[in-house]
Length: 158
Ligand code: 4NP
Image (cartoon, rainbow, N blue to C red; front, top):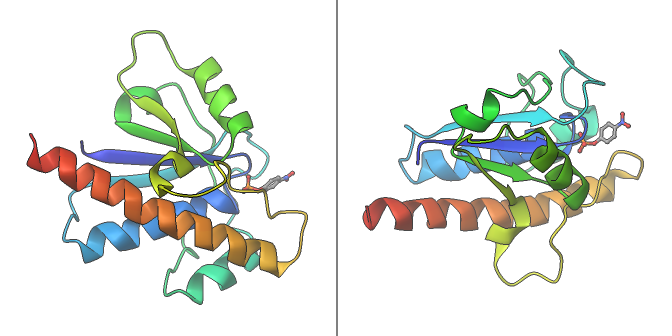
């Protein structure tokens, strides 16, 4: 297990935050060798920075995502990354459509790793207010901790 790709629709709100949150938990756990990246299933914002509301909400939790730039998921990602985690079911379904036969990456719903939560999707905060970003961060940080615990346990069991 050496690489994780976080995926949403635009790659400017949820998945950049998730990349930053997973990176923060990995680094705090000394797991700096694990690669992280994020991408969108759409190409709408390719090359652009994260939404300013996402940057601001993440910075409140000491997560700096300002240097990230949006890109679109590509076929090579399904072999390059071990875990490909979608923020919601639409993006999960799109990833399954895009996944080349025989590729090695495993597609998950990101909140599968969040444990006891009544929801399995990070709601899209793009069209809402700033509190949507704060709620997304709550869900994302919980899943980030669960994901890193999962990876650490797998590393220990070989
Ligand atoms: P994200 O949010 O998928 O969390 O990055 C969105 C960003 C942009 C759009 C939709 C969702 N959009 O319609 O442009």
